[in-house]
Image (cartoon, rainbow, N blue to C red; front, side):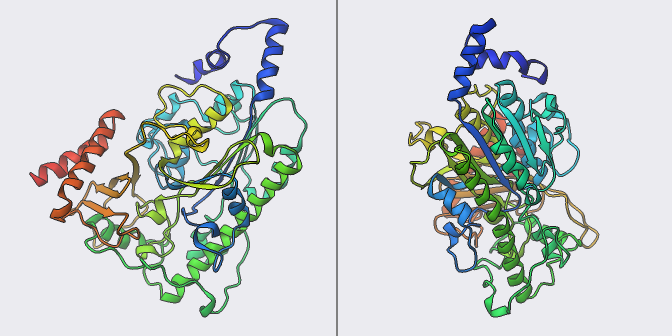
Length: 476
């Protein structure tokens, strides 16, 4: 389906019949009245356990996010489809993997595939929703053009300074259901914080060292780390963008402390949006989804920032609260690829037909307590590491693929002698040992290669195919 035919055809698929005149208007109004509002809240650079309901309140307190988790489903194994801003966000709003959209870095697309993919907002707009987008965008779609993005009301001003407008918009009287996206910049300011620069969200006063969080338990690089990850740590930290190569223990602890404060700043606004839904009488008929585009390593394996496949970077928070206020919070261990699963989930809640070419799955049945018969065996995460500098005259920009199954995490890279990693996430959730060369896990390794091969075939991922061909050729 292209943008040219999404109009009209979409309405027919939604309604299931063609109506004209007053009868059409009446039937449409009846359908609208039954449809829930949609509120999608996105933070930027928040790791999966970055909430006090996950790690306790000693160093981090997030009452807004905790409140949402108490009344929804928290997905414990939700992963960013690509742990970098623009590839992830383009995947989210197109409903397709980054290698399909052509947007695999924070730059121009490789092949413009997204141009043939309607933006998520258009489905809601064509279905009669009042659509609005507030905050960070960072996709190649033209947000200001409703015909392209689908959003009628837009403001790219950071939601930290835009919440008043969101609140006002939510409270406006209307006869249409709402589809609203609130996209917050923080805790992305941890990038400036790590460089000891001024932050747009305001300064922070650092307490004495003894009051700072301790170093992460997995602060050291993993044993048997892949060549790519060892090289890229040096390469990234050779730039002024990732200046943590000479950090002291106090510097790392300061980084973690500031990161938590930035999460708390966002949390206050999340809480305010939840208050507004209650005050406006919208909470009974609003589906709320909360997530982040990617995480931040904040000291794990001596990394900061994102892009990499370590859980602190690739695993993200995901809470889905269905319409109604009677649900008690629970957790779920189903594997989720957030950028491709959130779109189908929102469309499903709205009663809008999910396009056949969407590779993702709606989470609505799981949220409503129905266990899918075809539970996923694995998900795949993509990356392309380019934000780096030469080391000893050598420069590489490797591709990577990560396969996460119920128990294991397998990673494959396009460069180096040791290109594969395999971690038993049950025995080693902090990813401290790469066991790709362990004879005891040889069959597990081959099984995960098979998962990636199947993915590459089904979704026409030539990069993954090439990497598999190279490593399998070397191992034969």
